[in-house]
Length: 218
Image (cartoon, rainbow, N blue to C red):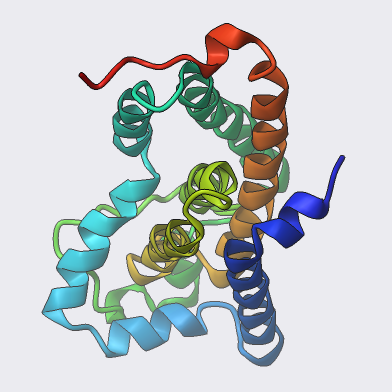
């Protein structure tokens, strides 16, 4: 496994490492649920809408749009992007079942604090033992991390900007009371590693000339 790609994709990797450090500090110096309590006490209507729809950037529609767009860049890139979504799905679900951590709704209900939370209107809270890790966060970091590896040489500034939707999805999961910081920590950690592995797979299949072809724009 050639780790030089992490160094070459320095912008996204550096921001990813900073993200993991910040999450670690929050976990070390706060109690579980404190971040949710903070957002609950400081809600702004703009952010309610922003995160409510921003969280969808880690869902199936985002993959579908990018798979179609990348057909005009390269068949291999389009194929691997779609496969990344499948890999995330088949990895996140078993992990959730293995760890079986309660969602924030169950956690705060057991503490008798659920009624005190200021929830985002129109967001239905999940109530199962599927909190750890965050599938949305894993998906977002895998997807946008993969794209950052694809374009870090040709478009380094784009590579850096791709961190923003990944971060947006991660924050949205806590803001919307669907996950804890520990959930988005592991989701972000695993997601970027998945994106890296899928990039290595892309490098391999692009050895086949058909995978370097694309739909002509004109």
